[in-house]
Amino acid sequence: MGSLSLVLILLSHACAVSASDSRLHNDNIFILAGQSNMAGRGGVINGTWDGIVPSECQPNPSILRLTAGLTWVEAREPLHADIDTNKTCGIGPGMAFANAVLRDPAFGIVGLVPCAVGATNISEWSRGTYLYTQLVRRAKASLQHGGKIRALLWYQGESDSKSPEYAKSYKGKLEKFILDLRTDLRSPMLPVIQVALASGGPFIKIVREAQLGVDLPNVTCVDAMGLPLEPDGIHLTTPAQVRLGKRLASAFLQTVPTPISNNTSKRWGA
Ligand SMILES: *[C@@H]1O[C@H](CO)[C@@H](O)[C@H](O)[C@H]1NC(C)=O
Ligand SMILES: *[C@@H]1O[C@H](CO)[C@@H](O)[C@H](O)[C@H]1NC(C)=O
Ligand SMILES: *[C@@H]1O[C@H](CO)[C@@H](O)[C@H](O)[C@H]1NC(C)=O
Ligand SMILES: *[C@@H]1O[C@H](CO)[C@@H](O)[C@H](O)[C@H]1NC(C)=O
Ligand SMILES: *[C@@H]1O[C@H](CO)[C@@H](O)[C@H](O)[C@H]1NC(C)=O
Ligand SMILES: *[C@@H]1O[C@H](CO)[C@@H](O)[C@H](O)[C@H]1NC(C)=O
Image 1: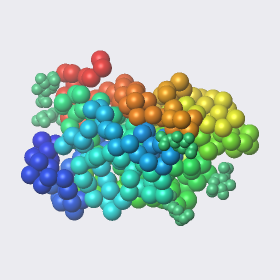
Image 2 (image 1 turned 120 degrees about the vertical axis):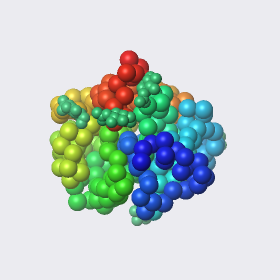
Image 3 (image 1 turned 180 degrees about the vertical axis):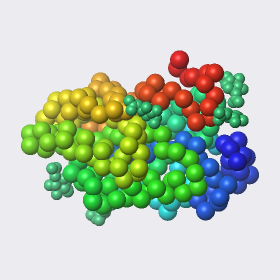
């Protein structure tokens, strides 16, 4: 049973699809992880989200989200509301990414697995930590009824740009995180698309150099520097997140050109 059937199941079941439903078959799963700018703070000012969802971030029956309770539902902003629970979540890059990828109608279903938590540092994502374990657990649960993890989208490092020691050790920790995750997900070439910081502490330059300099196969970097920030000077605005989501989609489609649908006659962005 393929993607079209799932769309029909979704339409007939309104929003919720049980993960135990063996008819569920996500072709294209993406893990979203990192800190606040991946979790999404677009439109959040003084702890309140303005509720504005631009057209690029609207729900689509072909975009699903794995809830904190490990069930698939139709994805809606804010994507991380039940994951980054101690903060007010707003718009992140995930929905804009998914809608942009789906401009190729042959792409199929997109399943998003939100895992980002605000204010976390790279050490808190190392193998054995709570966040790492949760990420692996959610990633494995997302595959329970088929599909393939197509990429990890990673936006993190602001917390590590506050001190020279943290910043200098960032590159080694990031590379180890990627290698450990690939091992634990048994996906040695898992594509990783990371974001080079748009904002951070006084040692942001060192962290950005680390991000832009990761030398591992199938790791690419999209630069967020210069995108508009909220008045807090840290968080990408909603329009900035839309632009970032589109850039991530473009990077993904360039890195991994063949959709699982095997339809190579058309490639978005080509
Ligand atoms: C947010 O809080 C600051 C400081 O209290 C205040 O100056 C500003 O007007 C507030 N902004 C909004 C949109 O409420
Ligand atoms: C929320 O805060 C509590 C108390 O500090 C902490 O135990 C928990 O891990 C936090 N959860 C998230 C998702 O950040
Ligand atoms: C990372 O965050 C944890 C929890 O807040 C803290 O204990 C630790 O010192 C931080 N480490 C680094 C290298 O930033
Ligand atoms: C990147 O990943 C794709 C898909 O898994 C794979 O086909 C390709 O060989 C990988 N590229 C490199 C350089 O490892
Ligand atoms: C390609 O997709 C079509 C339609 O879904 C399918 O019938 C065919 O078997 C696929 N071919 C390969 C080589 O996977
Ligand atoms: C493949 O893509 C082309 C161009 O979008 C489309 O016309 C065709 O129907 C697609 N074929 C399949 C089997 O999805």
